[in-house]
Image (cartoon, rainbow, N blue to C red; front, side, top):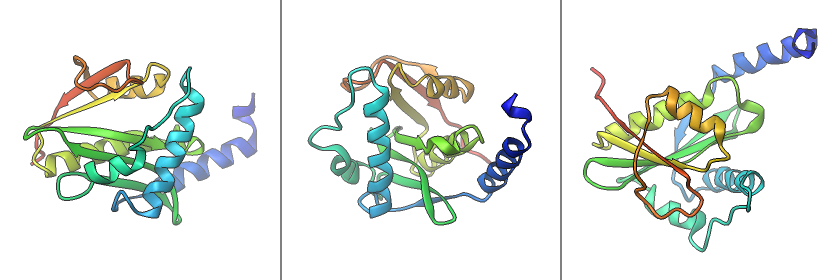
Length: 177
């Protein structure tokens, strides 16, 4: 099989080593790197969703307002200076944050970065004083749905009017320490 080919093993080992050196950098959601990452995220959704994806009139501009400090946070995932992922946290109410725009570049999937990013965003939500996080997702994002279940997210009722969402999840966070 291809998995036994020496070149595949070498590439896989290199990806795992490089994945260990990625950084999770909080930046302004209006910064060029943030817009680049969200653009890649939106483009992938447009391909994967059955009827395409339109970020709407607000799109990334809406994210700049809702995920900006001090009430929110936007994180890019970098390796060797390249942006390979992103995700954000925004305030819904005094107790609840929403995780949005989670994306990892397809070439970097399968090495645990999405789970690390999710844990990082949960930690940011806690640091913003939120004890509950919610998120929504489309039915075509089966890998994300499986990950949310693995990380302790439970189905919850619809909490927004996102026309692309089919599943809504919540998780109650416990402060560490």
